[in-house]
Image (cartoon, rainbow, N blue to C red; front, side):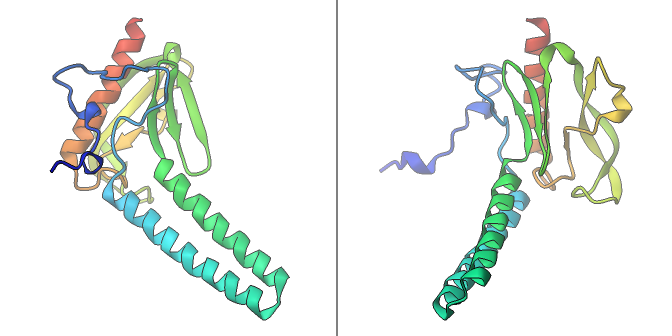
Length: 184
């Protein structure tokens, strides 16, 4: 008996049919799945938040409402951070390319994009200051030099660490979106 809710939507992985397989191109989409490292860190954050929420309930039972409110605020902050961590990445639509960070989201309209290409270069390992040799998907904009723009995706970030084929598929998809919208 097939269980359709267990099968993933692989429409973005079928590049043979079309590079841009979406019917509604105005909707913001991440053209790849979050990596297992990103999901694991977010899951640990949500696990920590559940313990903090349980602590808030225990503090309420002891009668200290001010302390319970502070602990509840900490739990909500951890939950918001975990959800934002899951949302981080590169998103595309017909309007442009969006890079969602932990605290900042930047959107570049397609008319400002000169090129999106993969380059072999030193990249940051898991976003830390340590750099290793890897591949990066770089964005060249009309209004800013290429050196000032951080890479969109790298082979050593939370989404693609140890998943080189997934990086190649995601980079090809973002490049296809850029090529399609630069022409149009």
